[in-house]
Length: 319
Ligand code: MTE
Image (cartoon, rainbow, N blue to C red; front, top):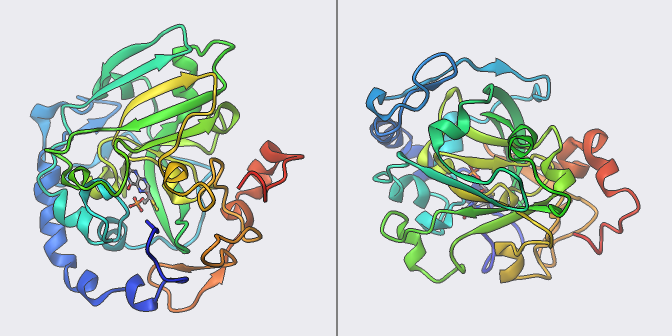
């Protein structure tokens, strides 16, 4: 992300030539890496590793009324222009250095203030849930954005399953810590593992999802395989990738970018054109693939649905 960045993104960074030229290369990489990933679907062998197929599509997806109708960002851009520091700090690094990452089998722990904590294999964790396609804008704090057809299910449904107690005021998320599989973790640019958190009402909001796929297929490695958070009204760094732990906590959990630079990255990190980042404006953004900037929308365009969560809060103080 953004510790040593110029005050704005140069157009050349947005649609880099190398990125364009590497599209075909990545497509073959993607097919090879999805070969390690399994079939998923509600009808049949959900995530059964033995059923791994190249380019595996997810089955049994229903369309969500929460989807935006905006033009989709091409698959190639979504999967080759990424922030995933576990695989390097350049936008092209995750596609390059996550090629050998094998997300399955994947174990997920649910713990903290809840009646039904547990440890799950990904397949069992997903099984009770109906997969939905949710087309959301993703607005990165660096002032670029994409429109991505995620496949996932509401985090609220997951939370209800684990029966949080009255002490559960926040939900904390942790990314896998495994420098052998995630080579970027040998670099001390961040304090690993990557951690994130939401207030309970944000986590329960119907727009908040856990994603297991995009463009109808299993999550590609650069996008956070095999399980990530997507919170569409917040800056992209809240959408933590490759989650291994979900914990219900009484106090506000630490979050990675807030620990790096608290004056730049707040706990809330709601998309807000009226609160500039100390080093650049948030008033505009560039949709990947576009030449011109467009105005940033309050709460990334989801104000009608989420503004009430922050009623009475000073959004300059709670940025
Ligand atoms: N999660 C982890 N574990 N590590 C990261 O470096 N980067 C964040 C977020 N989740 C990040 C992460 C940032 S800054 C953004 S903008 C989004 O992932 C990017 O998601 P995308 O690459 O799927 O577009």
